[in-house]
Amino acid sequence: MTVTSGEDKIKWWKDAKFGMFIHWGLYAALGRGEWVMYELNIPVRDYERLAETFNPVRFNAKTWVGLAKAAGMKYIVITAKHHDGFAMFRSQAEPFNIADATPFGRDPLQELAEECREQGIVLCFYYSHVIDWHHPHAVHNKYNNVWDYDTDSKHFPTYWNGLAKPQIRELLTQYGPVGLLWFDTAGGLSKEDSEELVELVRSLQPDCLINSRVSHYPGMGDYQSKGDNEIPMYGEDSRAWETPMTLNQSWGFSTKDQVWKQPEAIIRKLVHIVSKGGNLLLNVGPDAGGLIPDLSAERLREVGAWLSVHGEAVYGAAASPFPYEMEWGSVTVKPGRVYLHLTSDDWRKELRLYGLKNKIKQAYVLSDASRTPLVTAQNYDAGMDHHTMAIRLPDEPANDCMTVIAVDIEGELSVDMRLSQQPSGHVKLEWANGRIDAEAKTVEWSFQIVAPGTFDLELVCFQKEGASWDEAFREGIEAASGNRRFTAQPKPDQVVKNSTACQHPYSEVHSHLGTIVFDRPGTCTLSLRSALIRPKSGFTEIWQADPVKLRAVKLIKRQ
Ligand code: GLC
Image (cartoon, rainbow, N blue to C red; front, top):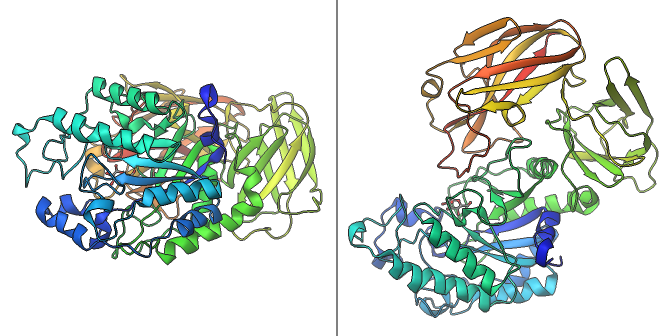
């Protein structure tokens, strides 16, 4: 992967799509995630003692970088310093670092930098710039070490000028070009301090990208970091974005957490993210010996095997032009070609797609080297101004997880951008695609009904583990279409297993709101009023996000 520079400096990253997040630090020795010091209120002195025996001699930069490569990842973001304040690199600014405070005595970032250069992977650093539980003067607006230090007597500039900035300088001067700096948890940092940090990075390495978590002020940095494990709706973000995601449910090494995502789920999520224009930063948590757990490595290799065949439809691909999720999978595009990523679960004989206006030249299974043409048909209904395309699919999926159909088109891609009922009869209306009035707490959609009928109205929400449903819907919800208007008290009727867009600590919950009739084809409208409706340009970190998030309304056509 070659890093782009100047005005185009984010291009390499946008094309890369898939990166490896590595949460590795002293906390690995305790095997219960990277927040262990805070959760157990471990005194600084005791925590420092962990360093005396930290000796990850099985760490091998070549193996780690090789694994990222085998997984089809293009960049690595490793925790140079996490919230525990322990630097995983040789630092003049603070002796509490892996090279000086442990028997290991090596600088793993140096070794990784060399190996990344060797294997063509872009190296990037995570740096916890505000939370630091080790330093007596670090101040966050919420998560501080209050068991060792008195927050009132803290002097933030001592930390900021004496540790954070010098270490960031070290990271940008000791390891050659750095692809991006991934800051985290900026709560309480002033706008001026955030801007100063951005300036510092720009002055040292102008091409180094910066994620939005550098500040709690919206729009800073070069791209948007979504909340942990958060996959946005279509059109929710107006700038480049990335979902940081766990492979199990933890970032740092954990002996207890064995809830692993399966390779199929990861592939689906990756493609889904790319189809919405984002990147996936997928995490591994190496142990205190320096090994990436086998269960992680196996999964990543399987994802890499799929990508080695289907990478053309992922790397450098643009988002789906259709402003809604497909029920059968996801869409990505490149000039002259549309990729339909079909999940193998409910394989069908024929795929129908609405809204593609271009004439099809040919369609074939991407993994089929001989490009055997698939039978296609196209139809245009002038009365409704409605395009339909049908592809006869092979009897069996070509891949156990996801089969990609490449559709070569004539001319420049042109699609019907209106929200539309799908060939299955259903309509999915995500709120980011509606007209939102944040003050009135309403959202309204216009959409095309192709096959009229009676529809069940289903509310789709993401509910955080432990969140109170009743609290979220205290005021009920109101739906209206034409003269039909009703209020409902949504109940958590159904929890969807294996949701592609939703994951721990949230789960996708559907509620039946009522039924509604659309009795003729054409443009229809629906509006919703709920206390959960938010302005669209939300700045989301996982702890700022609502415990119950309204996501969409689904109209399910009765047969
Ligand atoms: C949160 C957590 C942190 C983790 C990060 C990954 O900010 O505090 O432990 O590093 O998310 O996105």
